[in-house]
Image (tube, rainbow, N blue to C red; front, side, top):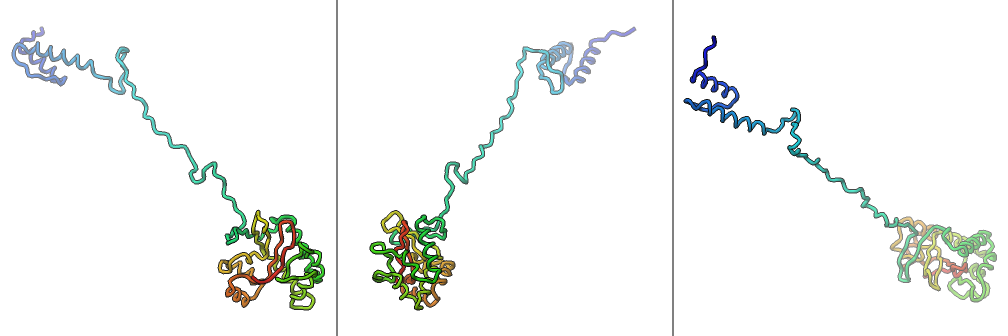
Length: 259
């Protein structure tokens, strides 16, 4: 027959249960039972208010508000923009070399295709006539009266071809025709654009200061003159050998030497 638990036995049992659940309290005397009941009741309420531990089954209490954490928004990168070249900025254009002179800008070019058609045609006729070795073939190109070509730096009279022949180092004018071909074989300078003095001039370096010539330009110059001539030009200050000019409408304007 099981013996009834006495007062002290009950207190001992309660103390053991409290220590096993981590709720040990100091109890003594006949109030031990009521102290445990109060302490145990308080802990029951506290345990019921604990939130669900991750991994446990979710609570069935639908009345309890659920707190949701908004996902972290990462900043979007800036749009890709090509800052090196603005979209609406036109590409740089390339063209013939521009040189500024006291008389205005001068366009230097080796591109014969850019010449106006009348200028290009006159240049071709001059070269073709000079290549024949017959200086009289230049006569139709030299003009007459107000349109007569200036040659030799002086009044050529009514027969500029004969004046040119007299300037040649040989009696037939072969040398002067060879010089004309060489001059027209260089690049040209376009001067006085948009003015009554507009002209296409050969050689191009006749419109440049000699101290500004690049090494390749000096090579072009020395195809027409000797190194000694070049030194003399440097003392003189500018190019002073033969040069020729054609107007935009195709008139052979001059073929002269000097400054």
